[in-house]
Image (cartoon, rainbow, N blue to C red):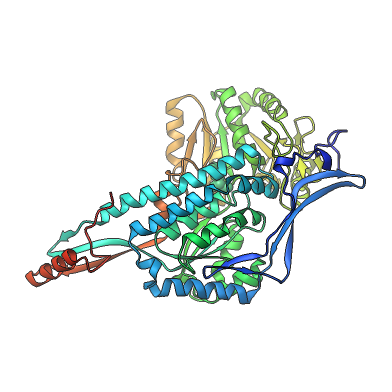
Length: 540
Ligand code: G3H
């Protein structure tokens, strides 16, 4: 271990801010199954925060609690509960009027907000997210629930009319898929789990929900709200090792849709475990290696600012992060000088410190992995150009700007998902364009320049390689109403407020030849209100 500075970045136990401490540790022993919070007496997993404290014997990661390591039996009970709640589409929840389901979601959102401080505190300690970013994640998630309800109102309004085509009268609506397994990532453990959980629920599916390996405890304060807001079995939680709980769930063949945000390697494994893969719908948010292409006429100040935000927000732990910068050789020196200064000016510290941007990393072994990437590049002729870049103190790594990065270096191809900024100089625009074309990933790209004609000529080929071209702006998912997806190994399906409603449902219709008798039957069903599906009720 290399110490970046004489004074440690980490606090002593006495200097921890009391209002943000998790005291006593959160020893979670509950899991939600079939509308009941069950007590767990079996093995548990201790949760170590990426935040360390100084002790006489060195730095120690703070233990903030533990959570249940459920086994196959509990996972299968949760699956049975979800299947009962769905009941082949005949359950209370999938047949409930859309407006009623919205009320359940509203109740949940209200109850969720009562837990705001506790969830934010856990986000800060469990994954090292700064207070400001943790607050943003929580508030964005609550807003997402409201936006989802509004989007469903729009969708339902459109579906509340009949269509008459070629002598056939029909009503087309979206219906649930069945039992959905939702698994989110550690970097947005709340927001990105809920980005699939909420639309899956509101469309009438029953859900099994497994929090990411890192980022479990922050869901504990919401368990009672889940229990009280939904009918039994509609939401069930499972915790534990993938092999113990996820493999049996997938192998059962009873999971109808998989919502997974993580690596393509794990996504492929999960899909393969399903005995009838064609029955499984998958909504996947996977890895990416988004490039920035900085042209010779780019506004330096603006492009450096966006590249720093894009590469280092939450320490670069975003699937949308800028993970490689291609900079035209004409401006490379000026760009690097500004980039180095901007990175050195960022505040490093603990999640609760005001204005902090760089914080400790939650993944075990992450700083070692990042050092390997940097060392590999340096062995092949690159250097870390910012003072102190890449120095490690336990779970913290100072951000490193590595230059010049070239093909053959691991940093050129691997998704670092951390505070390392590889910079590649280019003379010919064909070099970064080839990189994007040949990459295994196809999520987004950022293009920096000022000549409209040149930009237009690059935008057209790039939109067919990735799913979002950001002009003079960093890559990002938001606003959440925009479609978020990717090509190649980066995604399957589209997530956006309205896109997710479609992803977790299927169009189904009732159709009849337009005879007198059929017209009379439909009219009678409508006037008697004897069907929930065949209905012209309009949500106001
Ligand atoms: O980790 C990937 C996230 O979807 C990125 O979202 O662009 O809002 O940070 P963001």
